[in-house]
Image 1 (cartoon, rainbow, N blue to C red):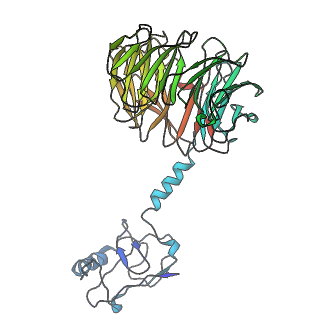
Image 2 (image 1 turned 90 degrees about the horizontal axis):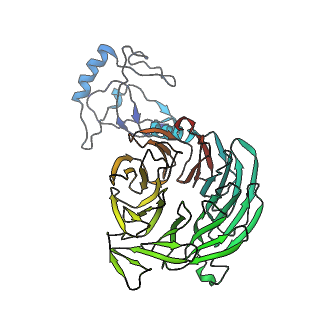
Image 3 (image 1 turned 180 degrees about the vertical axis):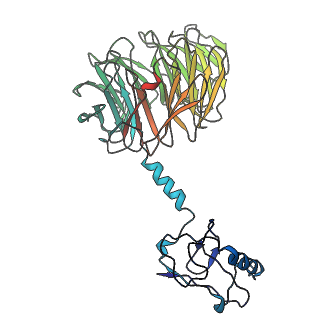
Length: 479
């Protein structure tokens, strides 16, 4: 039990109520507003719990004038003589009000907010990847730090297929374009291929299992499918990219050349070219049939490897690692985002850097191109807490959308003008790319959103988070 004591110093009187205090001294005095006192002035009866103390009419006015004349110590404390004590109240320490109580209650309230319509909790560690089937709008795949992947269906919590073929973190997931297969890439330098019931089809071996030594077994950072076939592409931390035929489980090409981890890559939509970006600050453009590196774009120049000893000067390129890339639907342009905060546009046909997009003030984490010809836009998200909508026809920022934390992942919603962004604080935000307005914020995750994907019917947004859960949010209103 704590007792409210008043230190002695003979002088004036203070009348009224106490709002905030500790167990030994007054910190401040404050009267709650109101026209009538809830307790009779100077009553000896203790107020009941929760009773409001109001100004004491004319007696309060008289008392307040005395209070204003009272003596204070050097540190601002007011002292009352024993004879002037109005009343001593004994309270439990736990009942004492705290200035942070309201903030704590708000924080608890925020933690309880959950806008998701489905939560998957099968994992036992952080989630790093989520993918939606291109043919089944309810089928979702997730992978994470527990070395496992799962296939599950939205709204059907009683069905899940575990994919346990990895020996290290599952970093990436991708469905084949026909929806028949799922590829999972891991830090164990293996890509596993599954059917949509969760049955294992084959294991595609990477550098750790093939000709490389164990010390190079740094794993795969991303995995992609050919747009029209069962060819799988993956980038490794040992500086190589790999391409397999998933139907035969055979390696078709190994793309060497990068001197550091291959952080991003993809097939062009026409399937005729492969683009890869790396920690070594370079972009490489490959012929997937021959394995030939057609162009190497880095810093202030690029090499035309089809012309012997040819050095062509071009637009300045990145001065730090590449984090992400996106390829235009006509297979002519690739956009790359870098740790240096810039976005570069490279012509795939000529190998030239044709434009630089500069608005971010920190690392560019993610990038996506609008799928609609009506909106020739790109979206980028960064560590600077900004999502930037770019007008590619003008090579300039159309809208800058500010977040409260880092933008970690993003995707356009179908063919619409809306962009979904996952954030470091767990929020998922929907932006109107045309106006730059925030139109929706989804709560539910308690930690960083690492990946997101849109269902094939564009009704659902699937998210994967460091909090160990995957969540489904309804986005049909944005179709």
